[in-house]
Amino acid sequence: MTADRTAGTPGQGDPALGDFPAHAPDTRRWCFADQLGAHFLDAPDQPVLLVESRAVFRRRRFHRQKAHLLLSALRHRAAELGDQAVFLQTDTYAEALDQVREPLSVCAPTTWPARDFVLRRPGVEVLAARGFVTDQTRFGNWIAHRRGRLLMDDFYRDARRLHDVLMDGAEPVGGKWNLDHDNRQPPPADGRSPVPPPVLPVEDEIDEQVRADLDRWVADGDVAFVGDDGPRLFPVTAAEAEVRLQDFLDHRLREFGPIEDAMLAEEPWLAHSMLSATTNLGLLDPREIVHRAEQAWRDSVAEGDPLPLNSVEGFVRQVMGWRDWIWHLYWQLGREYRHGNALDAQEEVPAWMAELDAEAVDANCLSHVLADVRDRGWVHHIPRLMVLGNYALQRGIRPLAMTDWMHRVFVDAYDWVMVANVVGLSLHADGGVLATKPYAAGGAYIDRMSDYCGGCRYDPRKRVGEDACPFTAGYWAFLDGNRERLAPNLRMRQPLAGLGRLKDLDAVVEQERLRGTDAP
Ligand code: SF4
Image 1 (spheres, rainbow, N blue to C red):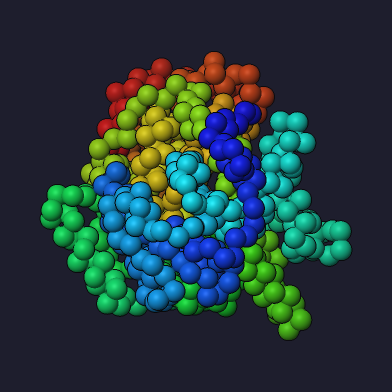
Image 2 (cartoon, helix red, strand yellow; image 1 turned 135 degrees about the vertical axis):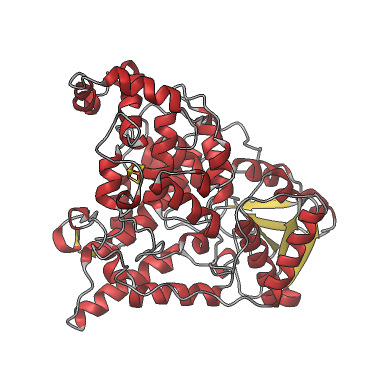
């Protein structure tokens, strides 16, 4: 693991380590569109600068609902702050900053290019990043002592100890750090979610204006979007975020753990919190989320009706484990990490996938997941990893292209979110730095964890023929095509040995070569 830290500016911190001062209370605070909560300010009445840059939307073809969410959140924050904020709507950030004459401070932005930009800008003091449970500098020191061992579980345990979360003295509550043996269960057999759907926000006149502006930009030919427009599904204010959090704690957390990996065709939300977009906009402080989840568990124990610890621990691990881990790795793995392509994957994202054309696809799982992304800009982590990512891994889609696509189509995705998730975890393009083996799976996994296969024209048990499942056949073709690259990996010894037992391997490989990335 090497970090490329070339953007350091004398007098400022190391951008990869986030080694910046913590506070600058007397300056106007420039808040990016993902730094919208009160925890990005040093005082409730601190003057604020907010910038809406149109060029951001011109550069990439985002999901329409993602553009709406970002603009709506920024404009709601400006309205909420009133005279406390200078709100500039310009083409670029540079144009906006040219209009500001007073010194500014900004919490370290969340991407390499944005961090470079603020570091080079005279009159802008860069502060330590906020919006995460754990501290970037401390993580840099922590990882320096790991001797190449990069395990999320190690980080998560230390973070729990340090922040005293779900601890019973020096030990984890319940005696175990990870209670996933009680999770990862298949979906309910009746195909229904055990919890009511989440409380959805109500749009207002700001949303109306955002919608009209986006329509106008598209009509002008200035920007283009993918995905359907639709009612706004995610919070854009701290008040809406609080409703979403409390709704989750009250009605969904209890059921969360066991079905967190399950997929149901008609139940996109299941018991998920849907807090990722909100937290990544900076509307909720993840320390508060973790604290509230723990408090809900402790209250439930005191009341004699305990929330299942596997649900609470699984949720806490998502927020302060995985989320912080992916954030820190974005910086620690350096700028070049995104270009990793250890499996030499050279296919482009196929047009049907890029366009979210669910109707073009027969494979029920892929079609449903694409339709969900088209309709909402959101699916939970398993459709992302085990349907979309699994497909891209098996079919050899370029990691950088897949990272870009996922960044654009998910409402909660940012560069820092997607790079390690896609390059490292999903596509194994880093050669195993983050994941000890590729997340490749055949149709049997999808069949076990969803209700997709029952209504599919393919059969998850078949690998050759008209009804051969593209995931099952694709799995074997993937192993065959990467046999030599994966052979040194001890954890792949058994799956690779399975290849030798397939009498129809040549037919499977030829069939999948012909299928390629055509819509399955
Ligand atoms: Fe997906 Fe294969 Fe199941 Fe069809 S049979 S839903 S393609 S896993």
